[in-house]
Image (cartoon, rainbow, N blue to C red; front, top):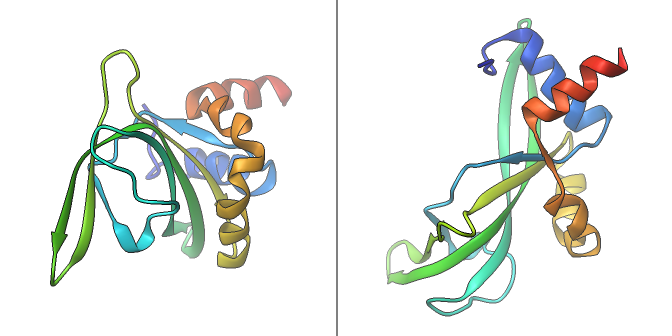
Length: 146
């Protein structure tokens, strides 16, 4: 399997996100999130939620650093615990089920402003995120377009 250490793979991934505007599905799970970056109302234990957050990632490609803001959307997450640590603030822990496993869909942007705009507008194009393909599926399609 290709990784981001492979320049060709990284170029293709960045092209998909930044040029084509594709959403990419990953089977990554989210263990917890700090409540201060939680988008939406805090739910209660046992409630299934969809949440979004932004990561700032630096990629190095051919000696150049590229900063990408990833808008991450987590689907099928069930709140399993809400912990309130006075020093660290609230943490919300998640689980999922075998029949509806948790997954992440992400999109990439070169500016934080674009990422914030996308995060707040996901609800208007939620189906596009739900229907996102995995990276290998995107790469297969990309290969047939060449």
